[in-house]
Image 1 (cartoon, rainbow, N blue to C red):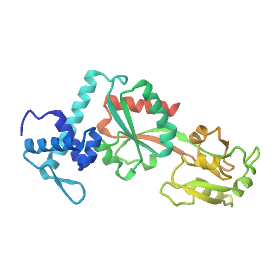
Image 2: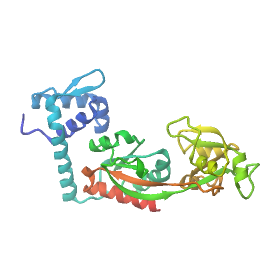
Image 3: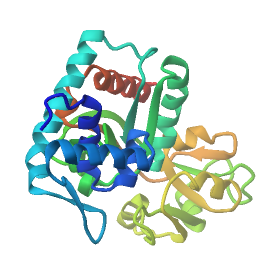
Image 4: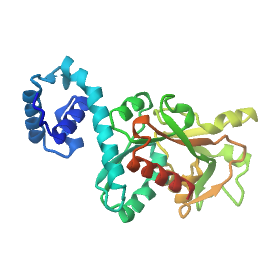
Length: 298
């Protein structure tokens, strides 16, 4: 192998081995597919090994590629840390990208305001929001595909680091000119209305209020089930449905809906920030986590 192999090629190899797909790897690296294919050809020549071979879906790493994957990633991470520490992290001058995984609720309530702030404070930093995939999150973080995730503590993988961000409560929302809701939303009125609930996996008609209602010998009719919170205020504002939503979502739509405390106590939930050991001491990653903490407290 050529001892003068450059770092850009090694960084490309790291992403190729993580993705096992030239198209996806090129997208992550900001390269065209032909340019990355040319880099892969150079890597094969210099390592004297195919490294990645075509398979039924994507590509499969050779034994040689598997042997170098972890040492390569560790070496590149160490170099990035040294470079960042030597230069000192300046968000205003930084040119990099962060990937944050979160639900639609967190993306709207927490991450969108952060993106607006980044446009002013760190115009060279790109943010990628993606959906949470809890089953594969640890692997995504190990491969550098996700930097930080926002999730409830009980769903966080045990081997990842975690810090609690905030506690959230539910509130009830109805449209501003609802014909059946006066100044107070009591239990009888709440149960008499048709409801919309959020079922993240789709198709469910049970929400956080149902157990609380059952404990009081009451029930409700759920007329609509949706997969995420963002659409709920729009539906409520244009219908006679009532919904329980996190208070941060309701606050953002206060001009279009009326907000009430739930007529019975409904347990809320906590939100935590999760990251991997490999990014724990990286200055840029530390800055990102500090900004997320500050935004959560705002």
